[in-house]
Amino acid sequence: MDHHTELLRFTTAGSVDDGKSTLIGRLLYDSKAIFEDQLEAVKATSEKRGEEEVNLALLTDGLKAEREQGITIDVAYRYFATPKRKFIIADTPGHIQYTRNMVTGASTANVALILIDARKGVLEQTRRHAFIASLLQIPHLVVCVNKMDLVDYSEERYEDIKEEFSGFSHKLDVKDVHFIPISALKGDNVVDRSENTPWYDGTTLLYYLENVHIGSDHNFIDMRFPVQNVIRPNTDEFHDYRGYAGRVAGGVMKKGDKVLLLPSGFTSSIKKIDTYDGELEEAFAPMSVTVLLEDDLDLSRGDMIVRENNQPEIGQDLEVMVCWFTNRPLQLRGKYTILHTTQEVRCVVKQIRYKLDINTLHRNENDLTIDMNDIARVVIRTTKPLFFDIYRKNRITGSIIFVDEGTNETVGAGMII
Image (cartoon, rainbow, N blue to C red; front, side):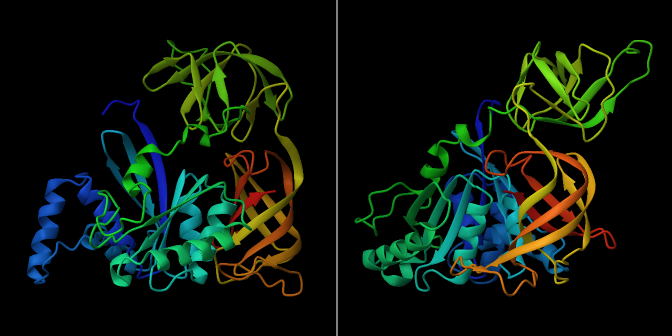
């Protein structure tokens, strides 16, 4: 597989029994993308259980056992490839605790798959997933109306669900929504076109995933390079070497570019861009590189390399949409540790503006108790300035993680607005 094959990241979301495991299994099975030994094992287990059909859910359910020991593994990543593209699936559990899983699994996704059981239609879970996908600015949304075999492949049922979902998604900030009627169990329209839905003239799910245009999903305009660590090998051979290692968070960096360093405000230019595999002429998001500058300047972790005429916002007072992950409510005037790019600072919650009702998208300004799975708009003040962009502009420099100072656990994820 040559490295020019594009990589598509997608996240799957659905409630507990709507066939997510089966769908992923079907994608892997019908696209011949699974490894033979896995398939043999699944066949054997299915036969042991006396099932006629190969139980595709077993392909993904190997992950369940690990999860049931206290759901420590929040997101399971599966990797597969077809000749057209490579894929990474962030499969998130469907339980009610799933908000944090969806947020962590989806923050880098190009596509979100939302499963709807054709018999049940649009549920609160469905609306929550769609809302989080829009909050996370996932560019493409695919709504799979599953279990079509259980509603006799009814076009009318499909159209009703499509209409109901669209009514909700119009209020959201989702640019591209695509609907596909499928049966993960029987294989209709997942990899192969179905004879059972002659009324559907769209593409199969795999065709969509292989061909959806994702080139413009990263921000290639605003150059952002948060420094992760400073590399000084201190050997005779490299005694002058001072490189800044990190991951490009936006834009394109080229050898010779004039740059501005934050927070110092000094300027310099890029002497060379190093990687594990050798030197590069240019680097772009989300590549990990080491940058060497022409001038001997002192940068440290958390600093940022940008362009003079294209700087992020710098500030300590931030407006944030936060998804809360824990059953200890968000505290007004509470202090939390904030992780933002490579920076770690402390913050205090100055104000809780409102809590969002997922079903109606109404803003509740009276009940400001922010519990597990709630989504709220808050104002925080950090102990030192952050170099940030609004999340809409850059998903990396626009997101923050809240950590509880006492227990060190991740308690929330925020999008800067």
